[in-house]
Length: 566
Image 1 (tube, rainbow, N blue to C red):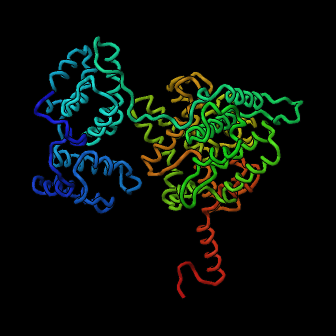
Image 2: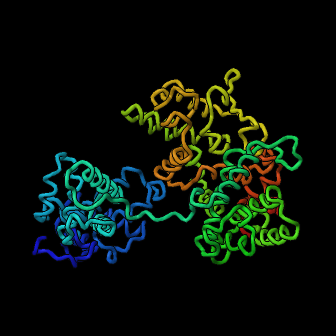
Image 3: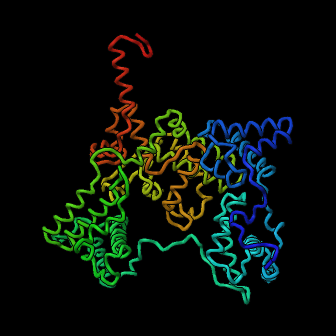
């Protein structure tokens, strides 16, 4: 390898030849090198980082990855500025760091390849593939790594070097592409050294596949699946109705999780997991649940309690354990049961942003703004995707339906029209509570729906199917695709962190704080069987609004006007 280079260089310094410089140093360089509006705008951009974003210029290194980390969690809406102003700040700071910051090595231009790597790349017939491996070749040249010695450790080092050097938004994706090109060359180029590569970030999953367990365990699980999907109506011990696919998958995953926990924790040998009854022998029930308990005060035991109740149902109705053993495991489950009443801590934290009236207004106006952004796009497919996002968010806002139902809406079965009115009908077989649900769309959502169907849906892949939101494989949009479609634009353009299910909580919060007398309507719209569900799981953040209403009433009784001092 190149004798002028040493393999003792830290990975983070492989592509970095400059000395230590901070953003304060960069600003000082700008003061001396720039003039006029360029100096004024650059100075303003750095001042904004320091004053509005809390960035310590003197302590922050002037490197591209530092700039990425600063701007990654920020958005124009959160900072109260326009998208253009935000883009200008990012561009001015980035340009100043590139010009005056810690000097960036242009990898493929400035690092002469070792002869071994140069000859190897010359054997690749495809120019794109040569480029795809150029960063790896430069890294290995600097580190003194032969092609045949490239392994997962090499890839981890390359990733660290890319993170420290590259202005790319996604060094991880660069590494993924490098691995793919290496493997292509390994298959196609005769005599390619080394072995195929895989991601160095992969690790063995905690939950073992069902096939990894003994045949007896697999047979027990299969028998449970058959019993729960095809219940015998003449068997008094059979379930009243068949499990839905999602419910059945939840049980099957619980079996795999707790059995994996027993094996991974060394409590039971893999070969000893003879059947479902193994989960309840001795201390196995408690030890199987222990890894899933969160540590620390205020831990939420809801997840592990759900698994415990599922296992108890299996023990009682499928395995028919005796009452003494059932009493023991039920006692454990009672200790895991979360405190009754109130929503979960995570939802409570996420809902706090909607205490700000400006955030509520941004959310409610977002479908209209997303539509406007979509209509100015020149690419027809991107325009169609934008209208689709606007419609999906509007339907979540004004119907409160679960995202599972939203993504599986069919034009021929779930959408009903009566004159100018449009209804979404969900049969009992499609709702979580097994009760029919019919919701009417407001005029603004109807307008989006009509526009989407008439002008844009036909441009989407697999649009000839019945699904309102078609997926790329011919079925409905996947859950992850729908989650990203409604979450990412709100985060980017409105500065709102939201999950699909949180829309239901937001509706309850908005109505409870402004018109609590309409909470019964909220309960009906959300498809709850009783008001108790609405109060226990969806309310809990309306205390400040209640105190404001009481304070207003007390002021009225006292005869004082709002804000009047004694």
